[in-house]
Amino acid sequence: MGATVFAPFARCPIPAVPRISIWQVTLPGIPRFATQCYVHGELLNQRDGLLNAIRDPRLRELLVVPFVPVSGQSDEQIARFDVVLGITPSF
Image (tube, rainbow, N blue to C red):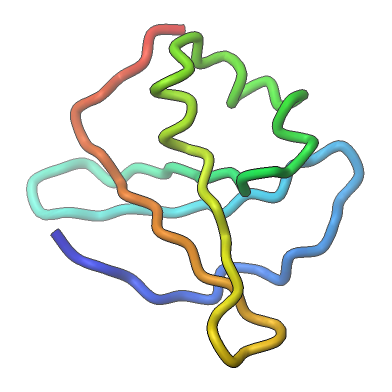
């Protein structure tokens, strides 16, 4: 269990692409992999093929994360995204 603080991207709209954060994860004894989280409330999530290919809504919601303003900061947001190992959704 751990935590990471990062500034992954400047959130700017790209036509037809939901705002996402992509993570590369490396852990001892586990092959490196990438995952991503989607911003809760982003309208383009409804049309994202990868996100909506996950049929189980409970598993899909694990990738949708609320970003909230950082107290006292006008241009920063924070989110919690738990990387869960061992769940492979069926497509």
